[in-house]
Length: 329
Image 1: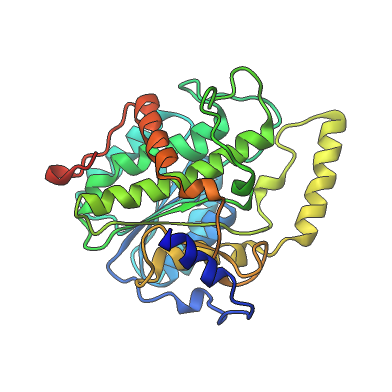
Image 2 (image 1 turned 90 degrees about the horizontal axis):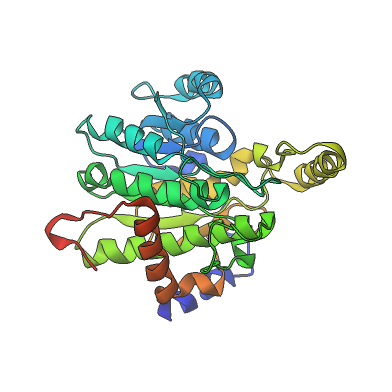
């Protein structure tokens, strides 16, 4: 309850907070950051900003062509080690394991993990390689698995930080406990909202388990507000559906803030040392503005739902987090 009151107190401040920008990111020399979905949009802007402050940035991307072009941009921004691309398809647990193995075999610590990649409101019910709903499977289960498999590398860092990117849409989210993969009836926006609420529940439980294990790992979340990214495209629709999606895209993009602004909450969450565990960052005016602590769907505060989602994720992915001797229940 104290955390709920704290979030409300911070979010109720009526004045625009100090304008925190990427220029305020502390020096990241000697740190390693992994960013999923770093080939475009928020992920690309996040990778650029972290590399510009000296971090070794590992860009975990699905699209090799886009990743190659993005790598050039991040390399140009880098002031430290040259960034690298790591192939990762979050919709395929085999790819997730391969990417995690590649990163862990380096035997170097991972200081920052930004779970940024995602898909939004897919018009057709697409399934992942393991048969999960593509939105739940990519946005939540893929990141749950990737984080768990990278846990040994994260725990090698002195103060590891895991940032998971949620969305304003989490406000409308509920976990469909009876059918989380929408096998009976697929409703695209409900499926998306569920996956974004799952991001918040995952963050809360990850941070709780880290503290119970006596770990220095901190898990936090962020959302970009309404930002101009590729997620607003037609998503493969045709005919009238495509025309409506295109109209919605133009309308949303006309109201959206640039992706560089949208990336600020997750950059703040990834780099500011004083941020408490399970903090949630978003734009000052919810859909736009500079980053600040913000409110979340009340369901995201439920420890019962967070633990239940964790157990479901363990069962569906077959991945359990190993904290060593301090592994919590």
